Length: 425
Image 1 (cartoon, one colour):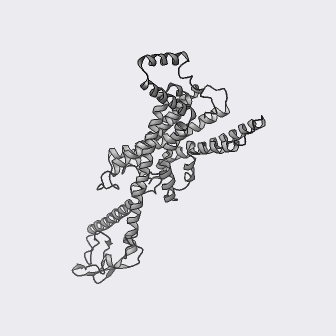
Image 2 (tube, rainbow, N blue to C red):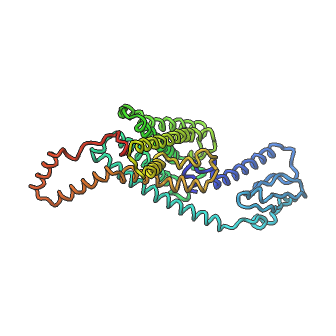
Image 3 (cartoon, rainbow, N blue to C red):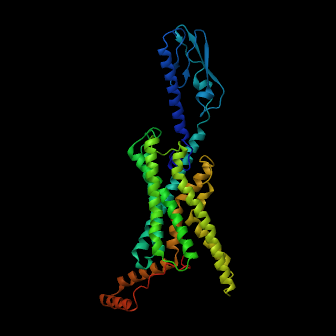
């Protein structure tokens, strides 16, 4: 149950386990309404009154009448058996059921649900490891980009915000698991607390922010490739507004709509399709825009490689560089999410688990690896810093002073890189 409910974009309108409880409660309420209607009608006294036996509803019958209840109607989620359970209406009231439910209705073997539970438990461990790995690597990457003055430029500021959105997403998963599933005795289908609603709202915000910062990365890269002379600082605050402002606006609208029109449960269902599209609509739109940007960036890269080849730079590996650039852009733009973005929610649930939870949990780690730890400038700066620390620990105080004077005379550690350097991107 944990994994299916974890990500609303993966589940059906209501989880099957909750659907069973919901239908059972609905059937009991209908039966109770029937009994109240009969009680109000004082002219009908003969026969057996409508009765609820905690499983099924036995409607009013005359004395001597035999009533049956279908197994497929009562246990439609557990058994496809077409057997019946019978009761006689006698002068003393309803007789005992024959045969009992457990004999008349052949239930499916419990081995399959147990194996499914084991599978989901294993899968939860996988995505927990994935998000934990992403969280550690992303925080480390943020520290690297903020600790060294050389990396303080518009390009890396955008990377830091993207990493922060991934950190929020991983944190939201752990918070939601803790709030909703820490207590195994809790009825997840009926619980409705401020804590669980806040956890779900924070989770939705992290998803929105993550998608919009993926969009900002795409917009920034296209601007960098298409416009050679452009003031990047002029657009930076627009990027901030898109990355954090739009998700906040969408979330506020969604929270108000849920509160006034669908304030039930922990807000982790998608019963009302119109309300759910308040979240899904902007995400789908950002994916569509990123697809267009992705295609355009590849087109620009192909043109630049062709121009380089025509200029006499005959590099036989330029197609390999293009393929490498494309593969690097896929996790950055979130292209793997487009596989199921435009399909109904109940389509390919198992495949969604693999792609959106299995692979998605490691996306933050992959992005931090490609755009921080595998970056040549970052590796060079880290090696220089480690070399400096190593030498400082082994030098005498006099030599340390000489070394510091020498470094200052040479101009320090170097100038900050130009944020318009296409080769570094």
